Image 1 (spheres, rainbow, N blue to C red):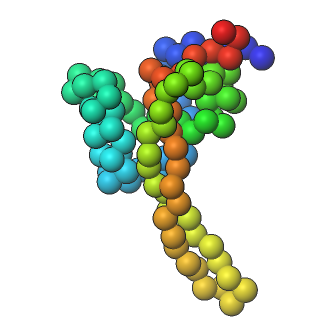
Image 2: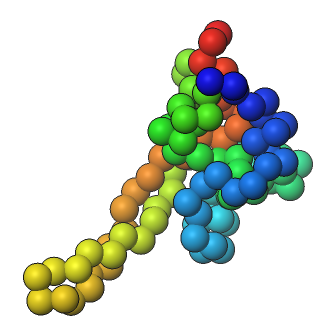
Length: 105
């Protein structure tokens, strides 16, 4: 497996499942601001650099020891047997690109 560099991941196409919610984008941006400061919020792109654990694993990275996940939510839709759609919020944990390292370390 050829592992892309962080720069290639950040410059590449969308790799997250982010659906475009400004509310969740702002929620994660606030957490980044508290941890890394205002200047790092300018680097934040929800489509490429804040991903769930499984996505980082597929890209050849893992969270650094002791790093904490950023908290976010996503809306999940379920259809029952009658065809009615129910929507509910599901909590998700994201790891920012500054808190991951290559698996080979």
